[in-house]
Image 1: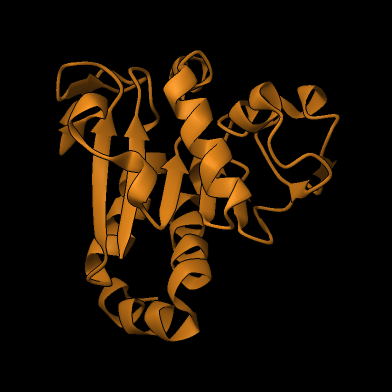
Image 2 (image 1 turned 60 degrees about the vertical axis):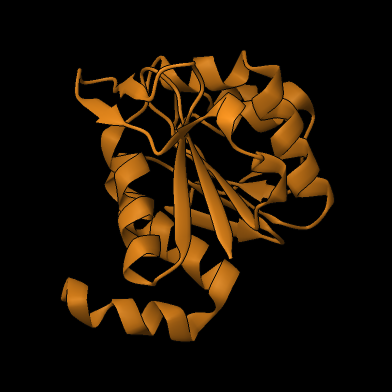
Length: 180
């Protein structure tokens, strides 16, 4: 099993690292992917993180799940990257898991992916998501699409992604080590 998580300059740390932590605890291979030629990516709060790979060095199209963290201007950088749009579109069209948290669901809107699906997102883009059914829930799963409202629900987002990909049993195995 292979999961990819995109890191664009300006990403929100907790929205990226919570899913990474959850998947690694579950023994699932998750690779963080920088959108630039550098593995060093700077978060929205100035924290530098070293990605596992760069976009040009991995075959992102061969994974089982793709995760988009929010953060500003991270979600704008995701939206502007056509390779991200193509990958998200392919994953969605082939029924693979796509996760987007905070303002990252704007990528779905921008590339016309998943229209009509139930989603949740940060209030800053809610009005832009007219082609979706906005629920306002902390985490929303509709088919293979998992969305979350923001940083405060990043752990719930990671657990929902793990459940969607691997089932409830995988979630129950990681919870004790996290005191959940």
